[in-house]
Length: 242
Length: 242
DNA sequence: CTCCCTATCTTTACATCGTAAAGATTGCAT
DNA sequence: ATGCAATCTTTACGATGTAAAGATAGGGAG
Image 1: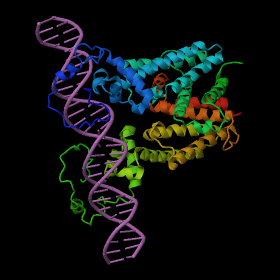
Image 2 (image 1 turned 90 degrees about the vertical axis):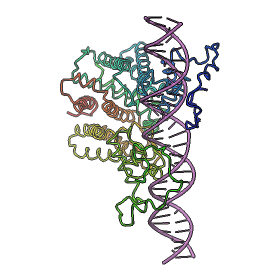
Image 3 (image 1 turned 180 degrees about the vertical axis):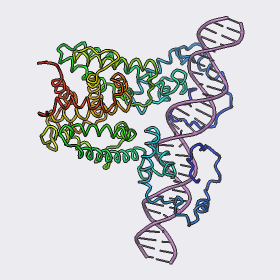
Image 4 (image 1 turned 60 degrees about the horizontal axis):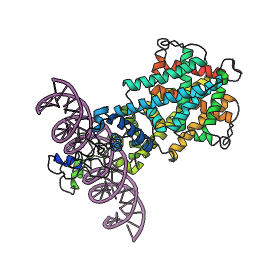
């Protein structure tokens, strides 16, 4: 254990001679064991991201710290710095992964839909389903102030997610959306759909909908509540659907 | 300055004799100055809450730490512990204050409305307006995992906020809402309204609506976007309003 | 009126975190 | 082969939350 950051070890211990003996590490890894943690990991960046996702799912957003991720990956606590700069960097790259997962889930949900009403319900339901399946990741994507949207990967993934939403609204209104300009009605339609689903998701993940759910007929699930919301909304807004 | 937590002072300094001389403090406060920080503050709890609100508005959610609040109030960093237990306690009490402010703002907004359409628009607009005027507080109330809703003050204030929402929906649908049971339609109406406004607010505070706003006709404000959303929603849902 | 008890506040201590800086190691180009 | 640069580890430091022990004062019991 050359790693100093193992949990529970006092950092203020009286330290040995100033210069660490160069032999100490080599002695433990005598040129035979390549499986033993080599000094140069080779693919640390990806390993750290995988570790971060594991930590996020296991310990939640609060547990997602630089040092915890380094521990999970089995490297020294300062190793992530070189690949991500700081916590914001790591978290932003992880959020980009989340957005890509999310986009993939949305796309596959749209494929399975047949009727136009199904198409209208499929996306929001997939949206909430993703958030429920990956609450930590969703929280990371939408609730963290420590996200740097100037990072290309995150910007791109989030932008793509937004484009998917705009396209869905465009399809539902049966009018094309010009890339750069929006009418106030189009903007309102997009913002409304997004606000509704995002708000519902946040309230659900925060347990704030419990008050409503427990007053509904016994056994009513969040999905059913969402569906009830969507159906009345869509019925009032879809053009001439029987 | 008997306070050790003044920013920028190394905590690891070689400390003087084990026992602090009891005269040191008395010498600086020689029974004359009652304005000089007395050992017993008298109303520290309220002073800490006021300080916390100041810190929150000045430095945002990230700056709202126990020690920062103690500094702002001019007491030792451990003083808040006695009154709030831990950070969750302080933050929860502050959130309760926020909910009460919020409820008051909503109530006064409803008073000024005249026409039924105004009544329908007044609440959501006041909701977003509050969040924009107090972004830190709103974030504290709705985005912090460190809230303990089992605290009576917070539970009560949040409950009252929810009741206000339910009443407004009840009035708009022109049907009374029985205290304990809800039909699925009623629940959907409440959850939809709340999700929409909450989601819009979150996205707005997070700057996620900028993408939409800058594509709208130049100079369109968030309020106008919200109004466009609300008008189409209400028009589709209000019973026989011209 | 005095004395002690208890609530209130301060000091001290420590584990943890993010981050900076310097040292160690290795791959790779020259 | 050799030296440079990228990668990883050590060390260090300020900040935070929280626990525990010490200091102070207000107020009731005698």
